Image 1: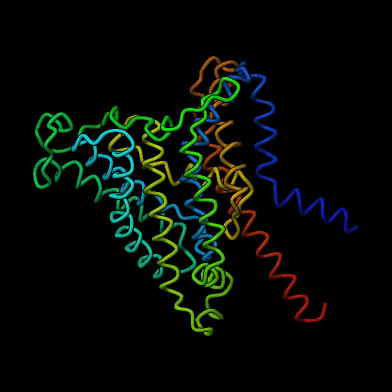
Image 2 (image 1 turned 90 degrees about the horizontal axis):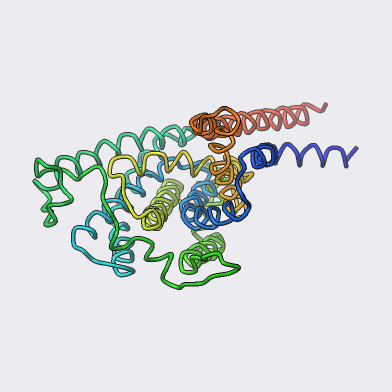
Length: 362
């Protein structure tokens, strides 16, 4: 009986990754893609996206759920990249300067986000999503109306023909793949972005170390029970703000890594889906609203982006249109988030029912 329960719990805990794994296993042969092409794509996509996905982990420890507000950090990273491009600072120097410049933007936006989320306890996820839309409006006001008029821009090629506002697309030629190609390495003919992977490994060690610090332990306590934490003398609101600020700062740095890999900024759209796709990838790796680990992030980015690569091609082979695959992967992104939230709520209700039954002696 115990063995059956263990199997049942394992399947329930990992229902999302198992479902995606089955779908990928079906779609990959239909796509007609070679294993070599898939490996090359996955190396690039993992190095490009994993830092951003891991920026979601710390707010989950603090009990704040999935931080859709990482788009605030992404906007900070983009502002920093626009400034660096305007100053024509090239290569690794430009990337590192963009990372440094993104930090004050991200701290400011993260603090604002943390204060607002403290006023919406229990509804942090939907609040962070709406907050992202609001700050996006402020960001667009800055880049579309202020830059070139209030904020001086010396490189006129960045501006729209009116002389005010940044163009839809900013070319990052001077820093494109500066981090990825900094330490060249080939293994079995595959280009390995060594420095980018070192950034990711460094973040893994930072998260492991941070969880053992006093602040990390306070976040865990707050995540488990805010009232008990308050009674123990922990400043709950301050700890929650710290978790959002750290997450936002990491997202800003992650967006710089992401965009230097792409080599271009879509000024008004590059950041918009960052929160949604990062959350979906983390959940696909087996994370939940209340618990997420580094292996969840790594497994999620592999499964999610494997699906991203094979779905359009499988749609084209089956239906004659790659757009079917595009619709499918967007559907999966939103659907997975909905499914995980439903499972989480269902399990929480079941646990409450069991506790109630124990309390009344059944």
